[in-house]
Length: 129
Image (cartoon, rainbow, N blue to C red):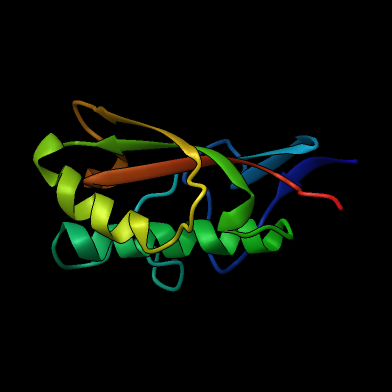
């Protein structure tokens, strides 16, 4: 059973006092990921789909560092600064998961860090045979 933080250089460094992800027994909790390019530390350019693609790539990197994949995710939360972006984000999100899909919540928020339009966090568990 693992406990403790997870860090990878393949996802953006934390912009505050938090870990990119954290093991708590058999559950893994990611920090919310926004569309920061880990190489530059800058928000990716482009539309909401470009931001969503970067968010999912960042989550994939954090999960990989924890020895997990999207198949291990049991719950996600999507934060949108504009609910009008729901369809485009949903299209990008759907490419990362296969059935059975994890539980999910999507909420509209007043603003996200660094002017991001989308942020996603996940809870995952290691599937043992």
